[in-house]
Amino acid sequence: MTTSSQMRHRRGTRDRQAHRLKAFIGFVVCFAAIIGIWQLVTTGYDDGGLAPTPAASWQRLIEVLSTALVYNPPNDFGIVFHLLASLQRLAVGFVLAAVAAIPLGLVLGTNRVLHDALDPIIQVLRPVSPLAWLPVGLALLRDSEATAIFVIFMASLWIILINTIDGVYRVNPLYLDLAKTLEATWANRTFKVILPATLPGIVTGLRTALSTAWLVIVAAEMIVGNRGMGTFVWNEWNAMNINSIIVAIVIIGVVGLVLDRSIALLHRLIPTT
Amino acid sequence: MRNQLVSSSKTQAGSIEIANITKGFQRRGGAFHQVLGEISCTVADGEFVTIIGPSGSGKSTLLKIIAGLETPDQGGVYLAGQPVTAPSRRLGVVFQQHVLLPWLTAKQNVLFALEANGTSARTAEERNELAEYWLEQVQLLDAQDLKPGQLSGGMQQRVGIARAFALESDVLLLDEPLGALDALTRHDLQQQLVYLSEHESRTFILVTHSVDEALLLSDRVLVLSAGPAAVIQQELHIPFARPRDRQTLEQSPEYLELRRHLLDALTRGTQEQKMGMQPIADGRK
Ligand SMILES: Nc1ncnc2c1ncn2[C@@H]1O[C@H](COP(=O)(O)OP(=O)(O)OP(=O)(O)O)[C@@H](O)[C@H]1O
Ligand SMILES: [Mg+2]
Image (tube, rainbow over all chains, first blue to last red; front, side, top):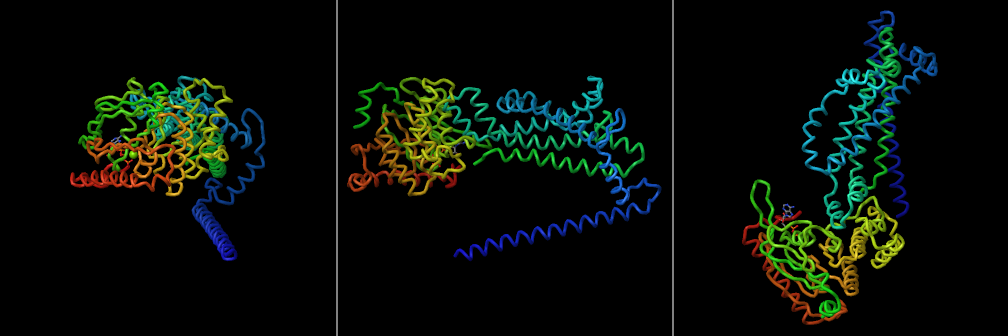
């Protein structure tokens, strides 16, 4: 009995290891293939470094990382400072959006009349690219920093709002019946029943919003701001330094992944049955 | 009988009157589905009444109306002479599916019921003691700090029962509280319910599918006919002395007689339903 179950356990572990090994080999092969195709595509255009070859990009990555901590205002910043500037804007805009959207979502989710009154406005503004708000922000705020944050705010707001409302609609109606039979006060009903039950929807909203905001900030920074990943990309483009842009793409991707994974951890905090 | 004893020594705080209520729902596609025909009955203070009937006949709907969670299309429900227009803490409910808040522990769930309305005559310590008392009554003191997800189905249902009792409502409405449980747990909890109901002078209205459960627990059984437009087609007094003991009860010839009678009434209801061309799956949630 014991030995057979141990054997089964061991076999399970072995299967999993075999699976991981296969997946890893697959990854290496695909990665090599991509580099190979990249090399093929770019060698024909060897015109003084404009087309980024894998080797040149690698070279540039080393350079960028070795000067990552350079800090010579006003124009010469290492990649770390660009990254920090982007992350800071992202954090401010994102937190402001969450602070506005979550309470508003709870109110709209629990108040049908208010929801139906505001829904047409939300539905029209939601599909608008956040970048369209950039000129509006510049005109109203007259400050590039504030405008970048405003764009992030707009990018996150609707996503968090709609997911929060949706989360409220998904609250088990029996919880609401329970709150009614207990004559729960508004505060108890909202904060001890509806809010916890809505958390999964809210976390989904935060997660999607953060990814979207990270997409948008890079684009926004190409236009406004004197520091940031977008600015870095724009400056390097103006310097015809395409290798740097490959480096920036890799860094933006990795940071985006880390952001997404860390906010996904919030899902673990919610107990469900 | 017990209810007479209780009602003579106490005010009529837990008496319920159901007067000519009807209820229907608009189905998708526009057809109107009459769930409850005209239903009237009274439940005395301290009485234990069971509603039994085929699946989908409208038992839960009736209980929800009594609880104030649904409004009847016609007629009204009166608690101690006052119309019931909204849910109230005087009408405790144990739901068909247990409704515990998954982010709270067993004890916190009971405490939430005690504190939800924002005012309490008790201090925090007294509420705590009360919650522990009722969890002990359902043998869950050891599990008080576990979340619902960590409890078995039977334990979850017992927390729901403890919560409803802790509320100290005048009336307890129980919608198949033991319906989703295995036979053994169910048997065990029925025993606990007999004990609790005999030691608590409250009014009980229980919905169940089980004839034996009805006979064991109730002073009176109302048999609902199969829908649509269900009505009370039978009313049975269960005369067994209290405290009741299942073994002695089940051995008495009177019990077998009542049991046969009830089963008869129930099957008659379903046969009528079939003749009325009602799809069998109809009304199942
Ligand atoms: N909110 C609602 N909207 C529409 N129809 C409803 C609603 N609630 C109940 N019904 C209908 O009312 C009928 C009775 O439902 P109810 O839940 O009261 O039955 P029940 O007797 O409790 O059944 P069961 O024994 O299976 O729990 C069903 O046909 C159901 O479809
Ligand atoms: Mg039911």
